[in-house]
Every structure is written in structure tokens, then in C-alpha cells.
Image (tube, rainbow, N blue to C red; front, side, top):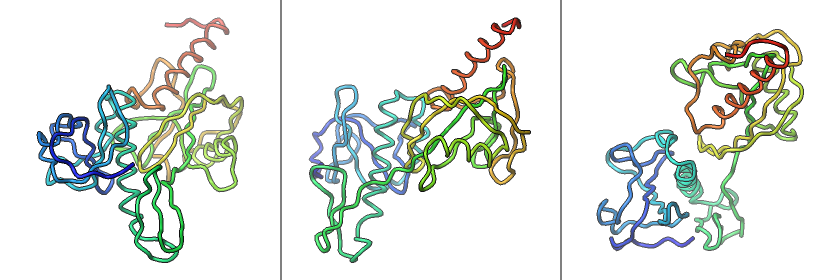
Length: 265
């Protein structure tokens, strides 16, 4: 966990990040020696390994080619997660230069991801915001929505942040009701995914429709509807937990049709 000044011979993957952005020359994560990318003299921290090579974090802004880590979403899952870790750690260290209790300048820990205050001995760890994301099935249909925060015509499943004092199950019920006025049942945990926008952990569920008339909250959703499994709109990209939830739900939609004597295309 110790910073080191690069001499130019270091080799690996380079995560150069500042202000939640990442350096992507040629729209790719740079790989090679520090000298090859003119990074010698900069301070770097090794944050992991991928494909047998070290992954280095450098906290600075480059003059060009700074973009969102979303551009790497189609890369290998582990590499995307490491890039997300780098962006989050860079922002954590940038925003914790001084102690929030006593104002003393802080130092990074050597054994773990932490900022230490030598004045009042406070310890600050990177914060992670837990979120739920849920795909809801009604017979052979899936509830999909266009979120206000998303661009383009993509439809996806519902999601939201966990509030203080809530269980994940309570969060699913509340978020779905707030955004769509729909009630759910038979909640089932599927998987999780680190999501660095800016520092979330997505916990994914599937659920079944229990009742209620669909009424999208215009503050959260531009549109929402029930879509038959074989007549779906533009979906999230592969590699996202939202896409996996939709694909899992499609399987259950087809099973429902088979069990109810309906033809399956």
C-alpha cells in the first residue's frame, strides 16, 4: 500500500485518475512501461494484479483523453472492477487530505486502504453506498424503465440506494413502490457487482409482481412499462448486472409460458 516514485522501468496496467475520471489514450487502459507512457517521476501505488501484471494507480489529471470508466464496461470483468477501484481510491485520497474532526493533514495507511490522522488518531476508510437493483416479472413480461439519469433510449430494471436502518428486502419494496407503485413478492437474491458511479455496491434481485397499477414517478423515470420477453426495447450492455437480471428473467418468462401451455418462439 506504499506509494513509490516511478523510475520508468515499472511495467503493468496504468490507472491514471482524477476527479472521478480515468486516462484512456486510444479509448483503452494503457499497458506497458512507465517510460512508454511518460509516467516516470510520478508517484504510483500498486492496487492489484490482472492477467499476471501489476495494476498501478496514479492520482493526477492528464492534458487529454480523460474519460469515464464506463468506457471500459465491455472489457474483462476483473479489469473493469480494478479500474473502478482505482477511480474510487483516487477520489477517496483526494477528498481526505485533511481530517474532518481536527483539520490535521492526513497520511495514507501502509497496510490497508485507509487515511490516518496523526493529530486525533481518527481513521477514514473508503465509503461504499449499498444499492439494490431488481428485475420484476409479471407472467411473461418484464418491468423496464427509462431512468431520468440515463441518456438515450435504453430501458433497464429498477434500482435505488439503501437507506439508514433498512434491510435489503425493505429497500426493494420501498424503491419499487416509490418509482412504480407496484408491489412485489418472492424476492430472490442473484448476485452483486461493484459499481464505481461514484462508489456503489449493487446487490441484484429478481421478484414477481404482486399487485398495483403501474404509475411511473416522473421525478425518477421518463417512462416505464411491461414488456413481453421477446419484444424488448434497447437494453443495458452485456457485462452489467442489470443485463444479467433481464436475461435471467427472460428464462423464467419462457418457463411460465411452457408451464401454461403457451407457445415459445
